[in-house]
Amino acid sequence: MSHTAPKQRLVSRRLPLAAVGVVVLLLSAFSAWAAYTTVDSTTRAGRDSRLSDAYQRAQAALVDIRLSKAQYIVTPGSTKLRRAIASSETTLGTALRTIASSGDPADRALAEPLERDLGALRTSIGRLMNAADSGNISAVSMIDPTGTSPLITHMETVIDRGAASHRTAVFAGLDSAKRSQAVVLLATALMFVLGVLLMVALSMLVRYKQRLEDAQDAELERLRGAALTDSLTGLPNHRAFHEGLDRSLGVGEQVSLVMVDLDGLKRTNDELGHQAGDELIKALAQGLERTLCDGQAAYRIGGDEFAVVLRGGCAMDGFYLAQGLRNSLASAPGSRTVSATAGIADLHSGAGKDLLIWRADLALIEAKRAHRGVLVYSPDLEMDRDDGQEDDRRHVTTLATALARAVDAKDAYTHSHCETVAELCALVAEELGLPPERVARIRLAGLLHDVGKIGVSDAILQKPGPLTAEEFAIMQTHPTLGCHIVSAAELEEEARWIRHHHERLDGGGYPDGLLGSQVPIESRIIMVADAFEAITADRPYRDRRSVPEALRELSRHAGTQFDPRCLEALERIVGEGLVRTAPRDFDADDPRLPAAA
Image (cartoon, rainbow, N blue to C red; front, side):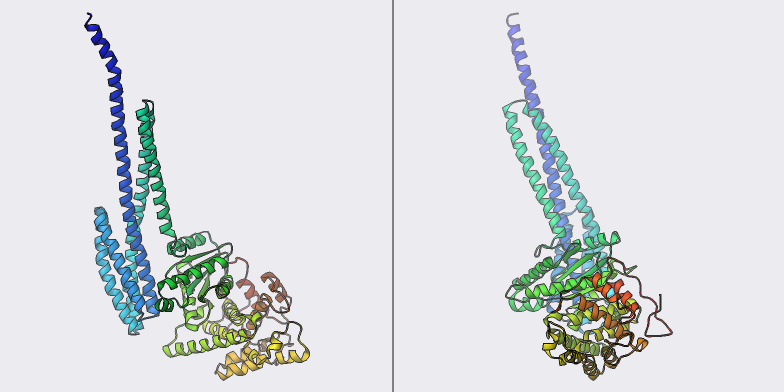
């Protein structure tokens, strides 16, 4: 009896200790399991993240291949573009091999056919570049839309599908890790009540939790930044551009698109190195940021290509923004001059994103070819011409641009006046329903409308006060002189329009006092565009006026000085946030005038 009691007391004392030990052991095992689950979730999330990176590299390489291929068609024989395409193909191949080696069976099933497609793509691009180098336009037109572009599109679709799957897996893994953390916290809370030993474990788990959250936050931030931001300029990238444009178009906003190309990047890279070229790219990005207003967003969409989306803006808003950018770049401090060329298109009724981008790209390409700083899309840019006509047109346009700049250079207050009038003329002519060939010719006439001022004294042109009767008589000679200059270039019709662009409908104009329908419709368009640009620009004798004020001023003279239908077309072009309608049909009875509404 005496021996039994101590044994029972010993057992009774040891049972709680054993129970505590068992609990501690179970909780420790439970904590170890929870930690293992968390590490496993994090490891899987890391693997999915690496695969997602590989998919992103593959996507970026395909975008670079598409852009470089398109540029090579425009500028065949470029060694830089060949190297860029080869480098992108290598990057794409490396990314596909990473996907195949690190992914699951589904990734390998996706990557292996794509590696075969990459071989076919290399062959197709090689044929395309050879055809472009040889000047075989018909072969280029056959190979690109039937071979190269569909293959790139197919590969993009497959890779986008795989990338979307792994993005979902990354976030699912992170969610799983967070759930594991909750389990860890529960185990820690239970162990806390057992004493100091468990407090030590809790402290360790808290630190582990913080490191895990920091790693998760850093990973999410890196993924977000890599997906939507250009690392060199800090601007949103090509993917963000498409997402932003889709959002604007999805809510039915009026949208104007400005495509901007940095001038001279290849020459800078070749002569001074890519670091100097990067400085030019960053300077252009900074110029865009200085120029943008509310409702406008800039993107870097390629090596030297940028885009600006203007929500609620029309084509002329984009034109003025592009001019402001060029002026900002020209006046920016620095050892190297930065310049850029821009093409603009706005959203016509029924036009979609792809068509909007294509039109802005076409305007940019034509601006580069004609050595124009800014060009607005109009249907005449799509006209088919044989090689001889195209060379002649480009030669004439280049000379016209040089003459227009010579005129504008005579007066700092009329900087870019001729180019602005030319774009307004083209847009008004398109809005009135003139055929594309005539739109092209009136754009040229608008560019040259003031060429006669070359013969007018600078003292008269830049006089800050009113002109005397004698000075005004000299100023009135510029349409006639301009007509003679343009006629000498065998542009007879354009010369006639320039001669009469100061005639009034009431017969009170000059130099011939034409009346009503005697004034060519093209001359009337130039007169409206010229007056509108003059009112909305600074002059030595007055400050600029707003667009609504300018339209009201012009409307006061509708029917006497200005053609009312030209004014209506101008109002629709520069109207506040209105989607432009399709051009009206041309009047068969009078080929000079659009049909009445």
